[in-house]
Length: 277
Length: 330
Image 1 (cartoon, rainbow over the protein chains, first blue to last red):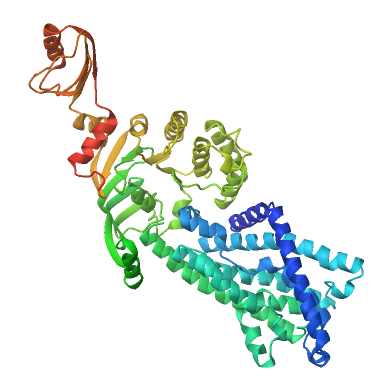
Image 2: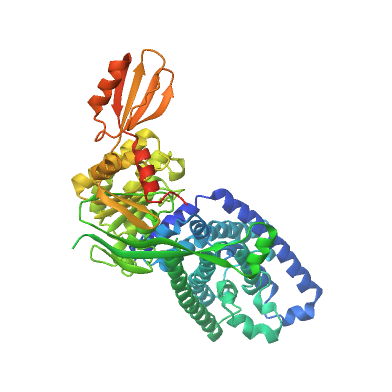
């Protein structure tokens, strides 16, 4: 337990600190409600306008709506931008202090990044659940609401997949952090990865709704595990062996990204050692 | 074996350069020009446990580089470094748990966290046993008079309060060695005194080895038993502070208030440093011109109101020492 103590402390300290930022959470929630509402209406229009295509769709409108609310709720779980704390410490040189701690620097940054994303997602997801899951049905708009998972199996798969999504996103965040540490700026990199993540995590459009020929590639790429896989598991669109495949892909990509990240981190830290912090 | 052993340490940096202006910026896109800067060349010294060593030198002399190498952040190009029997950059994790470091220009506490929570987090990061941590923290809080700021976020502290908190933060895990890189930079007089007092007590009462860099000669005067002067990446002097002072300082100052307008004095071996109304400041070498003889000679020919014998300010001494060795900031 003692060996995990620094990392647990770093996680909970960052998590609790970030939860203090209520105004940011409410602003984020408002934005995500707005976009969520627009997307839900667009999907409804598409499904209504083309009944034949809708019938052949791999996801029903109900599934798409729940997927959309969930995607909006969990937006902060995707590695949108480099960890601002890492970017700042690289710019100010406080990164030297991170090297003075008797801990593994990669793990320290990893848990801090995970705490940062989790703490931003939690209040937004809670508010979204309240709004889209409870208030909408209460005011008679249950067709537009965030629905519970269809089966116990779907709920279980989602419960396993969500922490895996956080682990995967954190591993990817580390790659972004390391690029920031190497280039000493977070500007270009944030813009570049933003667009990749929005499209390939399924945030823009559920990956299952893309053409059939692209499906395998879309499921296999690393960004799917950050959002699309857990969400498809939730709505029951991935089940049985496909569900296991989805979870396996999340584990696979997390492992790959952690290995790549550690390798890159070692190189960047050696360069910092050579060139000065 | 000494606690800190440094032999023939050398370190160079590559610095990117570009010509000024638009053309320079464009050229920089295509081809980066690099210049090699020798931060350290052949630095050697050793330090026994419990010593308090002051490191002085002009900006860019290599003080911070030396501290960064000793603390394991930087890897030297060549040379030997052994601290507590460990090679800092090679055994980083084992090494850093036994040292405390304060960089006066940077903060290690978390800006938005209250001081006490920052301390708790550091105790967890260093895996300090909880009972020991509490005892140690309470002692440091008393010593550094931090009780009133414990619940404040770090960003709200004054610089003096923050520096005291930084020093406490560096000591929570009871390191044997404390590296202080410009710990009094920008502090007001009372805060400087407080920092010096704490450093002195840590060194005397707890036996913590201290290596401190500073530009404030009063820090050195008040604290250091031994001083290393570093310039252009080389050790220029390594001696007890008094020896350093005596060597450079074979000079006295004589300030004389005359009853009338200050006269023109022309005494061999005596330099008139300044003249202001009825006051003269003279500089002389007491070995060549004994002080009593000089005073007697002046008092015999002029009406003197007051006489004050002094030494040049320590800053002046050091500046002269840098000049002597061609180590002034380039």
